[in-house]
Amino acid sequence: MKWKTILALGMTAVFAAAFVTGCGGTGKAVKDGSSAGNETIIVGLDDNFPPMGFKDENNEITGFDVELAKEASKRLGREVEFKAIDWASKEAELKSGRVNVLWNGLDITEKRKENMIFSDPYMENRQIIFVRKGTQGITDEKSLAGKAVGTQSASTAEEYMDKSDFFKNEVKEVKKYSDFVTAFMDLENGRLDAVVGDEIVGRYYMSKHPEAIEAVDSAVGPVSDFGIAFAKDDQKLRDAVQKVIDEMKQDGTMAKISEKWFGKDITKK
Image (cartoon, rainbow, N blue to C red; front, side, top):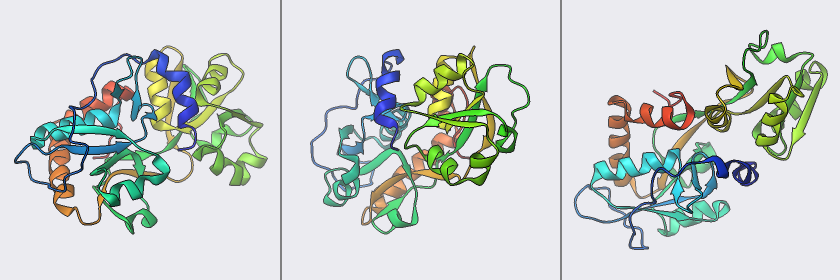
């Protein structure tokens, strides 16, 4: 996601440290999906992507996906290590065995399936509308006609709106910002009628400003799915992780973690 680095600078200061990074690992990924033994599962991530995975004010890696990975590893009886990688080289990191897993808000795509295997989708990646608390009359994409709408430059939402005849012709103004934090501030101050952006980012911001911002639960543009990625030849680990993820869905653990980070269970059932 192209907005994540800038966003982190604006939001990290308000994040409270809640979890320490995973236990120290071996530095070498072990391809073994069994729960026996103490082999470390190495999770590759971009550590500058709040709220999925990022460094908090104490320089500890935390986030929604980080917390899920810790719980899954605990249930497998395995240690977990979080390894910051060049996200542009994530497929090479996985294929080489330097990491076992990519777990960091990763979209499942047909192209990526050529080089890695995925868990079942665990969350939708949606662009939705955010408005000031108590706003009336904005209920979906079409109701943005005649409104001033903000989004972040180089974001998925911007890409969609730039191609949309509706946003070009019917919306009063599409204002683009260097980061979503600034867009939300203008929304709070009445300089925008709405912000269109990633649900995971917006809901996390909203959870920190519940008195000011609310979400319109209607997708704008196409919806993709997040999945956990594994090396092509690591079906055993994929199936082991999938099993505990299914357990976490069924016993409510995943919903609880989602509610903590987003103020709502937005995971995929």
